[in-house]
Length: 151
Image (cartoon, rainbow, N blue to C red; front, side, top):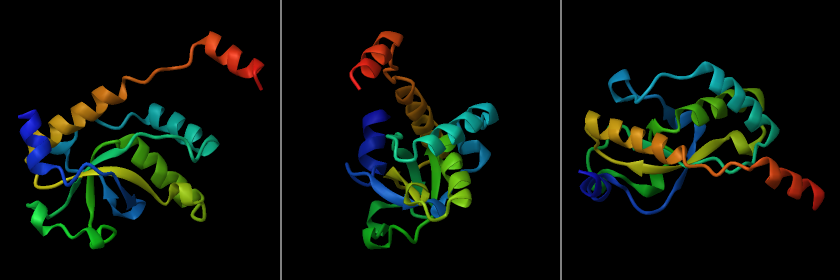
């Protein structure tokens, strides 16, 4: 299912900027997990301190579009998108956009767009996003000391 899913439902190899107002949470049956409020609070704090940080691209499904041929790239900012992967980043960005509406870092998120997903495919993508997102290479204490000493 995995390679076929990418080919059949993936809009393209590119990522696209999606305005924050166009990003919504999917219905419960398409959500991989519930929102972790403690993690969200910490993420909001981190994103406020580093608004232009490198946050992972979202996985989104264009709502009410069943086939790639129906998607018009020039209308990308007019569609609504379900966030399948990156829920916490989306919610943090929405919060910060309300707090700092003039800050362009909170105007939207970069995303990979999928079209015409069934519920089980949407769940699989959400799980894949969580799994790959967990492979972050954190700085060790040694790395931090070396970095601070080189400044």
